[in-house]
Length: 220
Image (cartoon, rainbow, N blue to C red):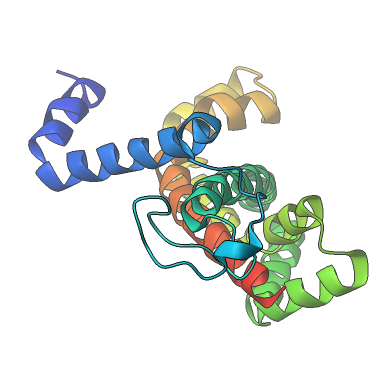
């Protein structure tokens, strides 16, 4: 039995993994079905019910404008998940390209790109994001771009390491000798070996992006 066929039975035997997967699916379903699940509009204001406590009418109470907290939480989940997935998709794409170029070609290109990554990792990126949003505005698009452009380094390092370990393998050298181009060798022979590591980095990146977006929202 191949590793792919072994994965699902092994996964199902791990109770914690199954519970975690079900919990994640539930969160995404609730966020996706927010218009049908949320009891109120997230923008509905009722000043007569400001700071109402938890009750059957408002399960999590209301805020300073009388808006239902549960409804705002459900709708807010859509924004957070959207920011997380889109920014990570962009950062993974950028990190894969830069890490692949650095590892595949090596030399001065590798040194330049890795020094760039080291330089970005050496500065407090959250404050860098705050300054960027102060200059260009705090729209949702700018938040996604700021997070994506400051979180590609981990993926680039992972991909670079995988490329360095794979490009000297016999089947890669055989593809070279048969006349395969650099793009084909990277996409068909090297990149698939890095996908598991990229997935792990991406899942951690989604959590980082959501936490960053939440912190930015808290700070206004």
